[in-house]
Amino acid sequence: MSTTDSTAPLTADVVLIGAGIMSATLGLMLKELQPDLTIAVFERLDVAAAESSDAWNNAGTGHSAFCELNYTPEQPDGSIDISKAIKIAEQFEQSKQFWAYLVEKYQVTGVTRFINHIPHLSFVWGDKNVEFLRKRHAALVQSPLFAGMQFSQDRAEMARWMPLVMDGREPQQPVAATRMDLGTDVNFGSLTRGMFTLLQEKPGVSFYFHHDVEGLKRREDGSWRVKARDLTTSEKVKIRAPFVFIGAGGGSLPLLIKSEIPEGQGFGGFPVSGQWLKCINPEVIARHHTKVYGKASVGSPPMSVPHLDTRVINGKQELLFGPYAGFSTKFLKQGSYLDLPLSVKLSNMRPMIIAGLKNMPLTKYLINQVRQSPEDRLAALREYLPEARGEDWQLETAGQRVQVIKKDAKEGGVLEFGTEVVAAADGSIAALLGASPGASTAVSIMVGLVQRCFAESARTPAWQAKMREMIPSFGKNLNDEPQLVAQLRAHTSAVLGLNENTPAQQ
Image 1 (cartoon, rainbow, N blue to C red):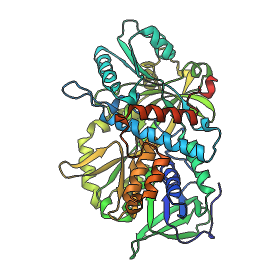
Image 2: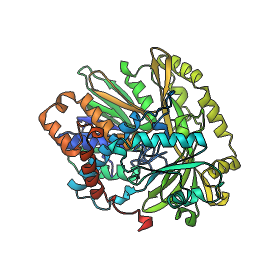
Image 3: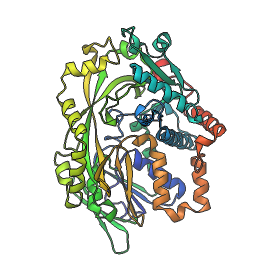
Image 4: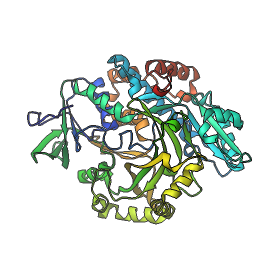
């Protein structure tokens, strides 16, 4: 994928900053809705999807709330709140519908390069956690989105589901698991690059790779002037556009601050780095074909939920365990150690200090994670794989995540663990901040952004009809329509090849 140089237009209808899954999704969606839109894409690195969207950097893939226990918190009265799980499951269904639409329309082949069938399991031990999982299962199966979820305390059955997890486990330990066969693994790096290839083939689309966006300024007519620098030649590029999307992962916050829109005032960020234990023994990898999520320790933040994760990367099955958290002042894996200090402004200093003081458990957790020895990490792994051997695993550094800190009228400042779209009142600029579940729900996030920032066009019959064509469940509540859920899942599974086994199992 080549970049466009000084021959590119000095104006565009849309500027996308950051060549990750969010920009790819928005760019393709807008071109489907209005083919004559002109789009310019700016990326600091020389390839697409090299930061948060990359398969090795992404802390979780195929998030659909089937196995992530932190999406179903237990309430003080003992009940299980499944509202967030339902929302995320619906959002992931929208993502699959949009991907299936692209595969069918553009006759894309080899879709297993980005999505594969991988069952999703939750696994817990201890009487209290077993009871929690039983109640969670009973609550979730009432929803058509979780129909078919299995619950088991049968050790023989669980050994068939996840042999590595059960091998060598203490026979007297109370254990339980749930299994959702509909689970998937998504390589968002491969998907993003494929989507940008489709976008590149459309007229009116320009790419500026290895260009660093250094300035954003609103013009008198309400449009934006974007200034970027070619990191190879130092040549400056200036482009005007009525709409700008900042989808630069951890780099979004500094650019939002530079925009000086009132809606961006008070936002800060707290960077957290990630690490994985990567299995390097093919025999061990070949015995595990699921994603197994556990329960975070009491007092630990949501990002600490441990999982034993089968992934398919470039057609090869991989096995990861983690995440282990770390701390760096960088906002991007290939960022600067000055990112955090330079992001502190008068407008966000108070919320950041207050959020920091109120999240001392997170600080303690990160300190403990940074101080971990190889033996400590192996001990954590052995809670899930009792017979794990240190020589079968190596430590790998994952991507950087920047958790959102924002003003709060009641508390002064709060730390958010989700994603948030910050948009100007006139819809002329929007930035995506935050992390999980992120990529898996990119389609629904971008649908919301289109409705917010292109409100007038989004209400027209033409755009409404196109939205329903791309995403058949658009405007519907899937949780209330069991037949539609079954129908759409059958279609997307067939188109995306999800009725087949993973490449490693074929």
